[in-house]
Image (cartoon, rainbow, N blue to C red; front, side, top):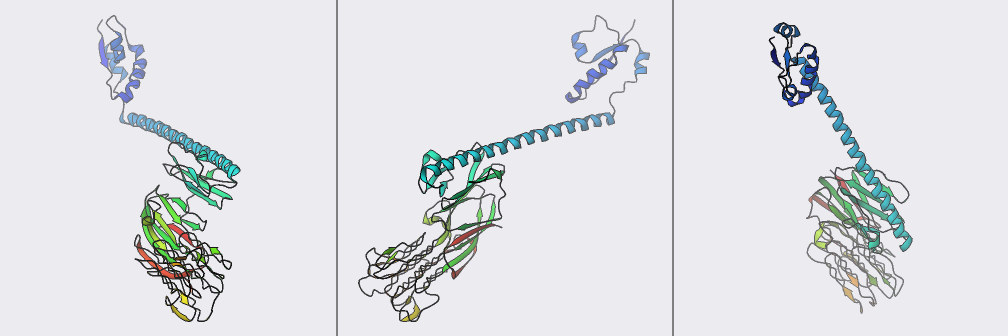
Amino acid sequence: RRTYLLKIGSISNIFFSFKYIACIALLPYATYTKDINLKDNLMGKIYLKNKKQLKNLNLAGFTIVELLVVIVVIGILAAISVVSYNGITQRAKIVTLQSDLTNAKTTLSLYQAEHGSYPTNIDMTTGCPTGPIEDTKYCLKASSGNTFTNYFSLSGVTFSIVETNTDGTGYTVTDNTSPVVYVAPSSSTFSYTGDFQTWVVPSNGSYKLEVWGAQGGTYTEAGGKGGYSMGTYNLTAGQVIYVYVGGAGGVSAAGSLVAGGFNGGGQARSSRITTSGGGGTDIRVGGQALSNRVIVAGGGGGGRDAGEQTNLSSVSGAGGGISGNGGSNYSDATLGTARGGRGGTQSAGGASGLRENSETLYEGGLGFGGYTSSSSTWGVGGGGGYYGGGPGSADASGGGGSGYIDGVTGGMMLVGVQTGNGSAKITKQ
């Protein structure tokens, strides 16, 4: 009896399994002989009884439509598998973020229990608290692929912290909430805290930077108002930015020393009531040194001490601008003359006012306002800034610190616009 061999051609490895389906369908027509071996079967060879059976089978192979259907089905199954995998991966990332933040909340609570307050600042590189008390026992631990960002504490009474994954997913937790999804604001505002603050850039792009310097201390004459500076700067996701918000100057009791406002305000001491300078406000990129400042708003000089009160000037000792305003003298409203402290410039600190008696006065410098010694008989503090304003002598006011915008593009500065403490704002463009 004659037998004929039909080979079912292989289309590709993807359809290899379909050959076996075809083989099973043809079994009723096949005559098995001793010549058939395992290899032939695996290759899809089938022996048919005669040509008539071959013709009747009408085995023309797979049609284009059938192949397209198979391809579509395989594509759908593959897409479902990918979606399922991505969903599982995303859920795993969220779980690690929530777990990290829950552990961080516990760690910060333990820090509070030992030191009486939450950390006012945390080094985002190490995760360790650096203020008010540095303590490496309470460093925060982030899982692989996660980074803690944007820690904020209001004077150690409350806290909030954000953790993000490399894909941009973020969660946040506070002292009185559980971890929740973090929605990055289009802008971040920074108020005075008495210490520097850190901010982690959420995404690449151009950011508008705005800073307001602090006002000098006020007694019988208002302290010089702080300046304003604005400009844009390109930042990279993950960069740590340092924000220094100036504190307002203070008022001393007679014969006492009063500290200058945070971030460069000049201290003052007098045998009568006197005032200190307001601090400048600045933003630093790439480090915390003065050389890392990219934008600065000058602080105002302290208001006139309790002496003669004629010819007061409403703009004496104002901070900001290319040069801060000088302080006014008790008998002359002309700024920066006689006993009034001189304003800081782009290249030097303000000189002190003319000494009346035995004042011990020190002129302003890079990043700090002029100040008096701790035993001076008279004197008023100068404002902080890029370069600080000079200290005022008896019956005069301190000079204002200068602003700085050379580190940004499209910058502008204003003199004497801010009362009270300074502030800062970063906005994505």
